[in-house]
Length: 226
Image (cartoon, rainbow, N blue to C red; front, side):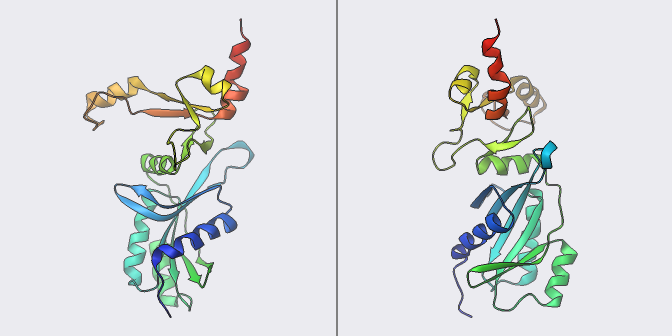
C-alpha cells in the first residue's frame, strides 16, 4: 500500500469526528508544551441540565510506526482528554493481538482506509487533569462559563484569542452581545505567595469567563435597575 503523508490524514479524521461524534468544535495539531494532539474534538454530553462536554483526542499514524509505540503515545493524551484514539491508515483492519493490546492499555482504535474512517474499538472514559484540559480547550478557542458551567466559543483562534469577550467591561459585553473575561487577583496573589505561579512578572493570569447567554439573560437586567 502506498504510504501517505500523515498531515494529509488529519482533515479526514477531523471530518469524521464532526460527522460521527457530532463535535461542535474540532481542531488540528493543537496542544500544550507537554505535547501536541493531531486531532481534537469537543462534543456536548450533558443533557438538558448540564453543560458538560467530552474532549476527544486522536493520534493519527500512516501505517508504518510500531503499533505498541503508537499506542503508548496515544495513551499520554488521557491527561488532556476524556477519550483517546489511535487512528491508523491501513488496508486491513487491526489484528486480534493489536486489539487486545489497545484494549489492555485503554486506547480506542480507528481504521483509516482511503478517505474514510471506521471505529474498531471504543475508548474508555478518562478524567483528565483539569488544568491541562481547560488549557487545551482555551487553545482551541473554548472557555467555561463560571456562572452556568457551559462551554462556549471565547475566540477566533485564527485572529484574536479573546475576540468574543469584553475585558472586564459589563456594559460593553451587554451592548455587543459578547461574553466577558475577568481576572481573579486575590487568587493570583495567593498563588504567587505560595510559589505556585511561575510567571516572572507581576501580572495576573487567573482568567475566568462568563458566557454571552448569562450576560444577556441575567446581567443585562441590571441595566434597568434604579
